[in-house]
Structure formats: structure tokens, C-alpha cells
Amino acid sequence: MSSTEILQIKNYIGLTGDKPIRFIASDVDGTLVNDAKAIPEDAVEAIRAARERGIHVAIASGRAWNEMNDVIEKLPCLRYFMCTNGAYVMDKDENRSLFHVNFDKEQALYLLRKLLTYGVYVEAYVKDQIFGMYPPSRCITPERLSACASESKEHLPGETHDRYALAESDEAAKATMSECEVEQSNFFFRPNIRPFILATRTMVCDLLAHMESLDEGPEKIQIFYGDEPMRQRILQDLRDEYQGLSHDGTGRERFYDVLLSSEGNLEFVLPHTTKGTAVEALAKHWGFSPDEVMTLGDSENDLSMLRFAGAGVAMGNAKPNIKEAARYQTTDNNHQGVAKAIYSAIAHNNELNKSKSL
Image (cartoon, rainbow, N blue to C red; front, side, top):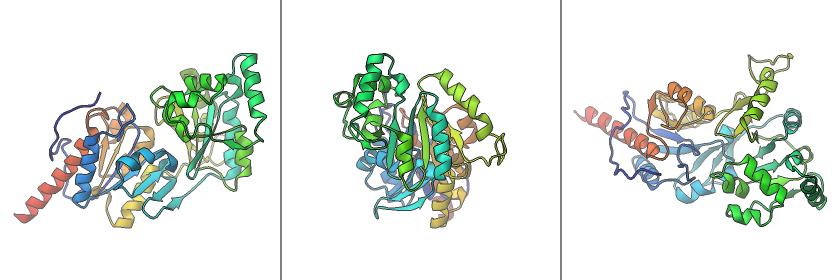
């Protein structure tokens, strides 16, 4: 799956400009990790090389903080993580949140009530946790529906149970899942992400009740819709609420945007809190201009940071609209795309240093 080309410090992507790259922000899924959900060694080596040359490197992802363990394990040198599309920014070394913004609780509950009527899997990102709920309607037979109902009686409304949180693989998860839940996980989650989803979510019996019990709203709401007709139906039904200017079709102030970050899911996020705003904030903190920033991404939730950076780099596996928005393009996430972009930044900086010394 992955390329084995031996890389060197070379301007693979044709990077230009009179400013050095001093800050690189990379997306994770579809960018830093390959389709096998692993971080290639070439990307690790490139990031180390960049840091050794004084370039700041940070993560900008739609993932929650508790989904970053694989990145931290592979890249312990990284300190800053812009999680949940920029709504939750963590300083790993100091174990503290630098920035946190969330939905108004009542607005979040309004949106959750709507989404739960579609019979899809719904989850809410709350700081370093993700609370999820399968739709009872997916238990197709009366026997399965009864099994899920009897199981739910063991828990109070809104109570969490983290049977999935310790799952190390699909089979490990299935050992503690009802037949209904196995069927639902197979329906909603693609095989390559299913183990990861099951290992990082805390399932609740009643998502609305659980969210009502918390002090504040979530940073993000996400659904896995199962099939394309359902995605189209949801987008059509909610179009007036998330499109247009500052107000929706009924005159209410628009309070969420909808993003497609990967196949099978939709993200419901705050309109003015993006990866781009988080990258901009960190750049300003370090005193870097946009021309000194490189960002790497492949999906709609990466558009804001690709547009902000002077060196926005789209992955080869990105869709056409993402590539059009980016100034540069690298190879895909299975063929050293991240490493080639980072080595291009190092090579570009070297050339600038040479020209200054002449």
C-alpha cells in the first residue's frame, strides 16, 4: 500500500516564495496516516528533520483529544494539538487546554433532537471525550430490539458505559457487544475505521439525557449515516439552517456548519471556529505571517487552514475542490505525501539561506 521510495531533502512540490516555512500544521486522517490507519516512518522522519531545523510542527485534526494516542505514541516530540477542528487546542507537555469553544447547550440539544430522528449513529465531542449512541431503529428484528432494550435497562438514562473504550480490535469489541450493536457497527462504520471508533467512544443509552446532564454544550456533533440516500436527505432537510449568510431560512441566527471530513460521516461544527482559526492563532502566538506557514490536508474541514497558509498543500487523495483551494499538491497519504511536503519546506528554506549568504 505504502510507497518505499527513498526520500531526500528536495523541493518535491515546487515550493516558492521569499519567506521561509517556520510552522507546519498537518491533518491526521487521510493525511498523516495512511489508509491502514498507521503513521508511516517516512512521515515521522520528516517531522523530526523539520523540528531539528527549528520548524514548529503541530497537529490540526477533527479528532478529539482522546483520539490522539496513536499520534502521540508515534510522535512524542509533538507538543501542540488542534483538536475537534480547532475548537479544543491542547498543550500536551503541560497537559492543559490553550483554547476551548463549544456550542450553546440549548442549541446543541436542538440539533441533537433533529439528528436523532433520522435513525443514524450520533455522537457529541465534549473536551477529551466522545459520547455516542446507536439508533434503536437499526435493531431490525423484534428479538434484537428486545435484546437492546433489556440491556439498556441495566443503565440509568444518560449513564455511560465504556465497554468499547477498552476494545483493542474488532473482535475484542464484538466479545462485549450485543448482536444488535455488532450489526449497527458494521452498518455505520467502514471496516478500516471500525476498530478505532469502537476503541475511542463512550456509548450512552440516552444521548440527549446525558448531554442535558452536563454543564455545557459539546465542541462538535458528528453522525455516521450509513448510506448515501440518508446523507442526501439530511443535507436537504437541514439546508436552510446551515447555508446562506448569518441567518437561516426561518430568521434564526445560523449556529452550525456542516462538513464532510471522510466517507460515511458528517460533522456539525461552530461556524467561526475552524482549523484555520486555530492555526492562525498559533501562528500569531509565535509571530509568524501566513507566508511562513505550511498546512497539509485532504478534506473539507481542512479548507480553512489550506486557504490561510501561504503554503497550503493538498494531498493527492483529496477531492478536486480541496486541490483547487490549495496552492500546492503532494502525493497521496499512501505514497509519502506528508514527508515529501515537509522535505520540500526544508529544501526551500535551505535555498533561501544560500541566497542570503551570497
